[in-house]
Length: 70
Image (cartoon, rainbow, N blue to C red; front, side, top):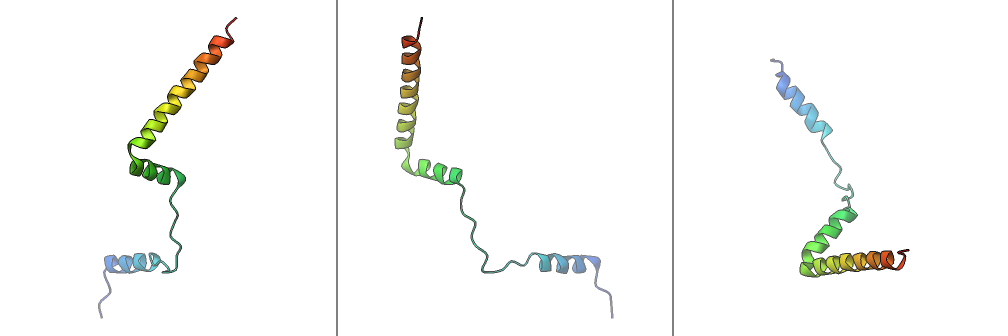
């Protein structure tokens, strides 16, 4: 009989350690990934809301700075 080559033995060991159970739960997507997918799906609507929010916050900050000016 011949001895198996080291590569064959190493390959067999890695195959044994990489076995996964078929009932393993599917990992859920992260919140950021879902938000990005939603933004891409909705297209321009998300961008419009983003820019409206930026304009609103800038208006609020400028208005507050004007009202609290000494």
